[in-house]
Amino acid sequence: MENRVVEFRNLVQMLDRGVADSLGERDALAGSVAFRKAVAPVYLRRNQEDVLTELPSLQQTDEWEELSAADEDAYREAVRAGNFMAMRRAAYMRPEKSAKLNRLREIVREAGESGQKTVIFSNFKDVLSVVKEALVVGPTDGTKPFGPLTGGVPAGRRQQIVDDFADASGPAVLLAQIQAAGVGLNMQAASVVIICEPQIKPTIEHQAVARAHRMGQVRPVRVHRLLATGGVDERMVKMLEDKTRLFDAYARRSAVAEATPDAVDVSDMELARRIVEEEQARLGMTDGVPTAPE
Image (cartoon, rainbow, N blue to C red; front, side, top):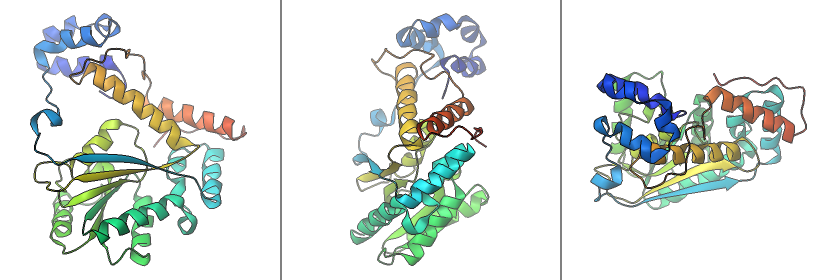
């Protein structure tokens, strides 16, 4: 469930058609308590904190960076073109002056100085390429980059890269496309996680962090989400907060009940279109043609 509470009914139908047939929109509209009661016969959720109490601590920090002049130029070009995906990665397209990239190198260097390994996630392969180049030529105290793990890397090879990363002596960095490496790979060797940009679905970020913060992890895990002020990142963070509240109210065991099914009842394509139009208006652009995410 990512956008619409009523989509949960399709999952219920796979388990019990009778419960699904009785689960109408009125149950969702009645609020989260009524909805959880309606799906109770077929739905049991155990949250990580309920069953893995022995895990080390997890600290998550939003790292807000002000765009450099070069970053701002790249971002305005993307907004003018109405290209949502280009807007999301614009902060890395001028690497020599990238504020996010400078902060990323600092985090990697600090982790290396304390002997910690780092995993870096991005949705975009070209961002990972920029980051890898910056780590190779930049001052990161000899930290060795592995990867990137992308959708084009065979599954067996992905696991081998993760194993090589875990076996490396001293500081190391694993670069991974968040959709390709967020599920099925164990990365407990890393105790520092960097997310290069906010994701459209909160579960994508949660699953990626869980690759490091899981059974076998012996260190506290620090998560740094790199965000740029005054643009698409701010709008996406607000969107993620809304989606997370909706999930907590309707699908996670919770006493929260203020969310309604239409709180984020909108597709990812519609959200992209809305963000592009709002940013074009904020920057005084009227000639761009918004596009949907690819």
